[in-house]
Image (cartoon, rainbow, N blue to C red):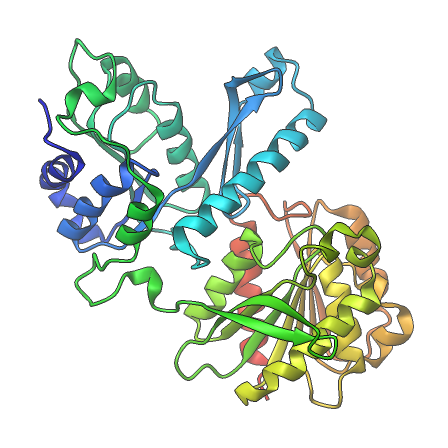
Length: 430
């Protein structure tokens, strides 16, 4: 079977996937070539379309040999056997992951323009590519989708090598492949037109309606780029403001050291808050030049001052303002809340935070109801949060997320954080 182009392949593939329409699936295209195919599938099924971005984790001295994969939302899947045989230790893993995390975040920002990814919790997910040669990327995508909460994973491709198709049947709950030719050598030979898909085409397709409701499902709460003046208007910080209609409050995010408004974990939490109708502001506490200065990165008082200035700027929205702080950003949030006028901050949530860095005097002055969320396996930070909680005189609660480490990378951990934060913010609206 030969296809005219990716559009033709997508339409023919969609005919074989009609039985999934009643499951209200989410369609995920592997960028870049899988997205035009996925678009036709999504449009035929009336399903929301998104990309699934996967970065291979390669052995440091032989990057082509993958020992795992990285996905959005802090998801990581690792082959312990390959790590062991390749003598990859935890330091190697951390270094490779840092590099690939940066590339992953850049890709996500480029394709979505800052919009949150579609949540997969409890959904049927159709992972689509334009073809499969070895199957390593498709396999990783299936694992990542499942780790992100998908209840059922369907892998759908127009063409695949027989060997790869056989191996992938165990990775997905269902494999739909139109052709597995015995003479397979490359995906492109089964297309009359296999020209390269450009980034601009991916962005354009993600911006089109596939649901029949007049808008892409994940654009319902699109973010707006904003410039935030600080330091006497001498400096502007970049931010992304999302305001669902009738939002009763805006949650201002304070990211941790080494992070930014593009933090995938904070964006995942923000997406949950947006779906609940809350507004969110993610912004860079530092300019790119300042972010290179390690002293400023860890200057809690300086960061708290920046947060306070942005908070004053956001009062023009005329709704209550809340803080969500992560790591050192949580200390800055509590510092700023302590210095705010009465009622100036409605509530505070700390994710894996360092409230102790705000200082005991300021903790005692915080009036906003405060929720401290810490991973059960993050013992050092958990102890620091327990000590800090003894100095809080406001309404406060410490919640330990069982089985979670500092970054809440474990399946379901970040979703738990988002749900608890959403509940705290909505329960403490003035």
